[in-house]
Amino acid sequence: MNRYLDEWLFLMETDLCAARELMKSPLFHISVYHAHQAAEKALKSLLIFHGDRKVPKTHALTQLFIECVKKDPKLSEALELAVIQLDEFLPRTRYPKGDRLDHDDAVTAMELSDEIVKFVSQYISERC
Image 1: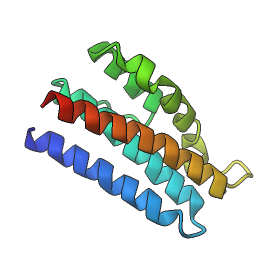
Image 2: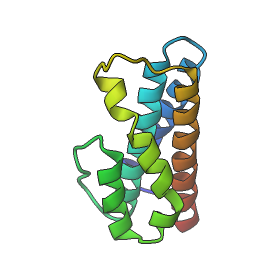
Image 3: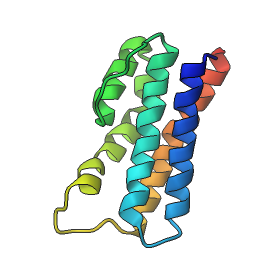
């Protein structure tokens, strides 16, 4: 693996760890935010793994996922639902809408992010 990819994978893991730790507190919206960040970094890691040197400057998982599927169409079946569901949380972590993310939201976001991160980690390790 190259150093640039290693750095992205490290940041992915630290965001996932932060999300998990924050679930122990009432800061559920920040936990969801870090769960989303971990998945974002996982998808950007996939793009780097497939040779991209510059990753899109976006937080939209769906947009990143479309770019990943262009590199490997098989990814669509494996991750599409988790990506779409987790991406729905993003606006609620960044802009107030009158409702707050709760523990159940954090659990759901964590599960979705964990699924994406585990898949990407395994995908990359099997091909290195």
